[in-house]
Structure formats: structure tokens, C-alpha cells
Length: 117
Image (cartoon, rainbow, N blue to C red; front, side, top):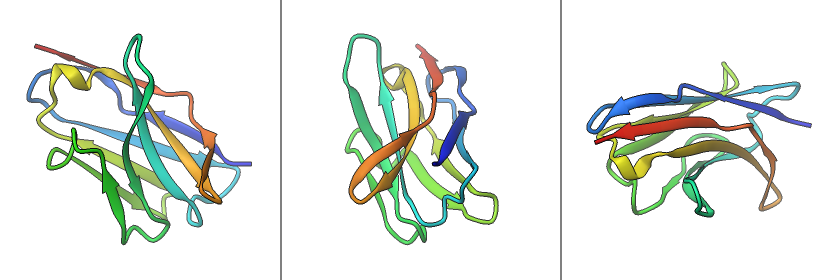
């Protein structure tokens, strides 16, 4: 079983940047597609970005394209989400998840990102 731990969230002003990290324990992340999701208060959890096991393929939600970048360092067993030009509407709890056979079966506990205007 993969255990995922997110970190790097915080309170920033609009226009600032943050880098979230998703670290794995117990098992390597190298064989998994990893996704980032976010959930704002009172809303459903939404897809943000995904990266293939090698890092060669990435996908983004339209709302974050050009501002967010997903990457991974398999030597550190960590996936990152670089978030630039943050907006108040980016405020949410951000989760990373490991995809197995097309399903996101393993989730972290989330990290809070708050963007003030």
C-alpha cells in the first residue's frame, strides 16, 4: 500500500507562488501515475493535474494551464505541483493521489492552500 503525504500549503496573497510536494512512504511512486486534486469549501473535489510514471506525459485542468506545473523526482520518491500566479479561486485543500489500473486508489491527507485577494 502506498502512503502519500502532501506538504507546502499555506496562506499567500494573490499573484504569489507555492510549491506543493507529495511524498510517498512504504512503496515507490515510480510505477504510478500521480494526480493532484483540490476541494474548495462546499464544492466537489476537482482534478488539477496528472503526471505519468516517467514524467513524460502531463495533463492539466483548463483553470490552471499556464500557471501550474506538475513534475516528479523519482529518485526522491516525490511529485511536485508548482503553482504560480495564484488566484483567490485557487483556495482549496489540495490532495495527491496514486493511480492504479485507471483508478485513484491511494490518497494523501491534503494540504490547505489559501490565497487572499
